Image (tube, rainbow, N blue to C red; front, top):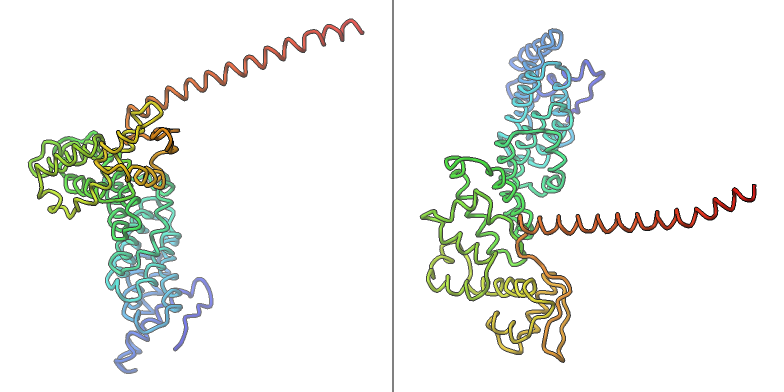
Length: 410
């Protein structure tokens, strides 16, 4: 099989047109193929001379897609590198965007055919762009391809750079919602990434703050999904979604009201409240695929965290036993589980049958916690300033006599 080897930058596009059109028309026989190949090459040459880069991209991409399954992955990458490079030829941002749309549309038509190669092509296209919105557009198409082609493992590492991307893209709220929700949906398919999935879903829900009731209603289902994911996750114990307007709207919602009550219990109350809620609404968990025993286990840990934040440095074993509704011989087991999960920092005092808490943990880090942290930082800053002032004052006192001695000597 021949390989595309352009002889110069100017001839690269023509080489691709000839190569792809010859393969595309190969089965038609030379009598039919040769005129068609010549025609396509002449059109391509005319587009190059007149600077009609969008028309050239459309011509090239049509033949290239037809031969996608007939050539090696190396040739495919070479062909599409040249096609994608057309976005750098035009000085018109609108034309560049249209070229991007032409390329991405073709690439996404057959996502299951060599999906990893198609993903590389889109990433290459992204890297050639200098227009923020074009970059965002291609990135979203990359997410779509990764999902449809079942190659999300190649795109997931980029999620760590989303904050950096957002600074460059400067996209609006609607685009942010689209992005956060798409990422969350990708991550939730991998149970080991449930924390990150909930993080991006929370970011999605946070974008609805300040919106009216009609707009908020668009987020109801995702808000309910966030609650379910938090309750279900065995390793997520802090949650900041309770007061988000997109979630808070569910409190009085006919469909999701009970689910919101469940969230409120998990975030602010203890095991007894959960058991009472479950007894009164026994079918709720089944509706959302939640398991009662798993909820009890999580609520016991959450209740223990609550005890550590309320206690004055110590928690009696007896109080833990009664709050968690367990046997005496299970108290230390649950404390160790909480320590292992890094929920509390404490030591077991078996002699006195108490748990000594070193650092209490807040179950919710909301406005109140931020204000408390601010107060501590202001106090710390003041203390540091006092220390610096004292050091400077002592330095002046020590330097004074030395300076006087110097004058006397002279």
